[in-house]
Length: 209
Image (tube, helix red, strand yellow):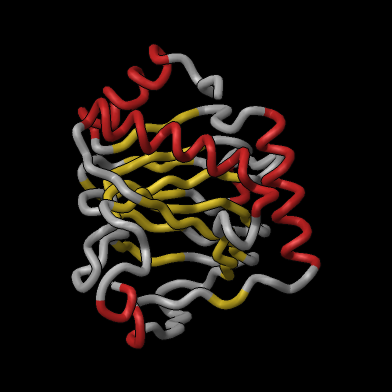
């Protein structure tokens, strides 16, 4: 399989990730994969597949609307083979991260996320105390014609302070254990494809944690 990106492009992105614990990647998804993912998202919305997101792990999961108010739908290769081109790209990323940053990665997990108008997610880290296998977080935005007045910025609190606009096909890759972040209230519907690269496959261990 031909690589989606050159070794030089991956090296540039991963060097910045290593230095800053975060990298913003513009026009991340190739056009064919972007169309595939965007159309798939619309189908899931039409079918009512997205459900209120919860926080916590395993049996401790609960919906706390005062902390997050988005709606999500988990995706995986077995249930959604039509997304295989996307998963192939993630395998490429996973392999380069392991090679260049010496991180032993064995799996990944992804979900679609929609924030309705007024939706937000309070400051948090993506790595759980009870389940520490999330190594890197990847967010890919699917918001056409997004402008700052629409809100919904990804606000980074640590280790740097910055706001990132969730514009169409922009991706943000960051350390799950170090980057404290939040989603500011959106003033219109905000969509993303969000996932994590794992140091062991999801679902391994007691109660899947």
